[in-house]
Image (cartoon, rainbow, N blue to C red):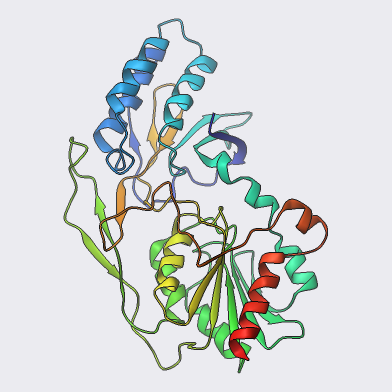
Length: 347
């Protein structure tokens, strides 16, 4: 099963900023009704059936007979999560209450495929052995200079938490470095507008990046008109020397939007591992009568050639990956390769 389960203290059921939609209300709270509500809601609103070439009706015919009036909550959870596994979409989540009103067990579709990446990166190792940290804003953003190299280092753990203009603070304080490494490994995503804003400090001009469409009707092909998204224009204060962007399989969602922006700039080289392949925005939290909540992708992102990277991710220009053993031995071979690459570019 491609599921990943974990306990969280729930700060917010959804990060979409939209109002909650309550499904069911005073409706019957039986397993069959809960299954029907969830399946039909996905059928009417989930955005990526066509992108993923998925026959949702065929999954209904497989999984609906598994649910009866006598199905327990544990059995219903198993059936629904197995069905949602087929979406292989990290923006698809199902939550059930755990030990307290603030604590939930969370299922995320497809996310066990990239869990190893969490063990193959350590910002603590980088901060202690590779970088003289000059500035840190909570856990969201930090920058500094690499020891023994005239190369700057910027780390973004999420596309939120600090204003994107902080990139210009980093560029000012890093001074006349010869190159910069921007590390978005293990980046958990956030807001696309932040992604575009963070990338602005490196822009060499406006580039057509992708289109966005929101599902707006009952047919799986019903979407609004495509919105074209471009990188920000070039500014005289932007950094135009060599840049490396580092990604891994846990670079997800808005972290991937940042990567697409950066890849459009001539001076940027993308090094590391392929990203998660989960670009869509998430809709408002949905509620079932049994107290479970869930969410899903409501948009599709297409590259200028009409293709989608959902479930595939963004492949780097140069592929290199750490192992858990590397990190345990105090070595970040991805970062070391990026340093060597930039030194060759500089010299």
